[in-house]
Image (cartoon, rainbow, N blue to C red; front, side, top):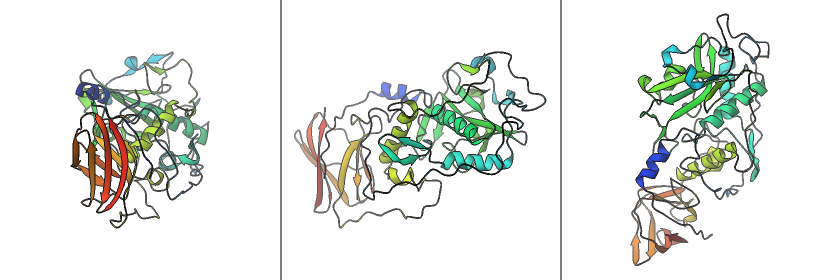
Length: 388
């Protein structure tokens, strides 16, 4: 057992509300801050190479809709730079003639490749290749969209555009998802790659639906109301004021430098899986939620002691904010207990939610030093917690 020392502070509701209204990826989000304690799991499983992205039906640079090619006879590109505000409008007024065209086969193979390919390596885990952070829906849509378009171009697909959505003043985008501890996320904007298939705009966004690409109207309906949003189809920019530049921009590779944009999103995704009570090595490795897994999910053993690895929260990671999550292993719902002792308190804490790897406690405790004991019957694990 390893002892962990963290601080727990209380968050004002107004601060939480301000964070919740951010664009997806527009700030560091609820689960960001310093790097979590990422270490090899007990299984020590190494991850295999990324999925082979080469598939039949890919476009070539001369295909209709590819960079430098013709996306359609009616396509009229802007004659200079254009901003989002210059091109925005309601979903029904989108000028889609210049959006690159894909075949049905390209759409199917491209979506599977961008969803499943494990191409990203973090300095702490060079052998543990990661997918784009589809399981961190709260923030990071710009990084996912830009990385997806970069890889599509590298693989030889006609380069998609960005479908960008912004909420109108005093409106917001709300997405219900099992990949967020609260069950939903709130954004001021969202973005994902878009292509034309058979005359229809199709969105490739595994954070919204990992099962398939979505027609744009269905995609928008997952998180918005038509009258509350503006939409633009942008060639060059996933975020900011710009939409089209004078000449096409080359998609940049994902920024995996320590604390670069994609690096931070991958850290956030790892934390979210822990807070949800998932094994990050499992769901970010060979067993994502959308696919079959050769190894069954383990079950807790009430005849063995639980373990405590660290404390976390659903707001920040370097400080333990309210509510309190105990991250560890072998927690048994209805059997495992948590005793908090110190500062004049000695009680069994009320457990609001429990699964094999995570216990949630929403009870607030005053500042002080505490001993946290997690037990399966007489079998105990302990760790120190400082609340200040």
